Image (cartoon, rainbow, N blue to C red; front, top):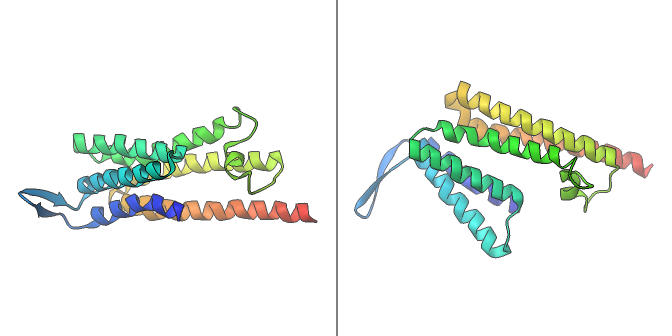
Length: 191
């Protein structure tokens, strides 16, 4: 359930982005709904509400939530302030590359990789497997950031679809690959 909550702002962004632009009256004010700029505002508000609620409930946010929220507010704010969606297109690549740097840096800071810190309570694996899996995530985040950037600036009409569905499918397939590595090692260890 917790991971599904993370997708609510993205789904709302997608729905509003894909809407045909129309003017909506609220009281005496009129707002345009549909397209990249209203979708960006919806993404920002939904992210603040979701992560604000999580913070109020748990009294803390995971580091990944802090990075994501900061990127949404920063790049979303610049998108709206400069009325240029290029800023928003840079958000996903930069967030992915920040995660890549964090995973890579974790190999040199502390005794455990970031992946082992996140999953070590549930799995017992040799250090070399944790290291290989951690490096795999570094490579994946670099690739996903580059793919997002390439699609965003090469295939303008497809970038929102790729951001929502393509990234999700690639991540899902990558996680399946990680589980195959883990299961192979666990089977070897049990024998």
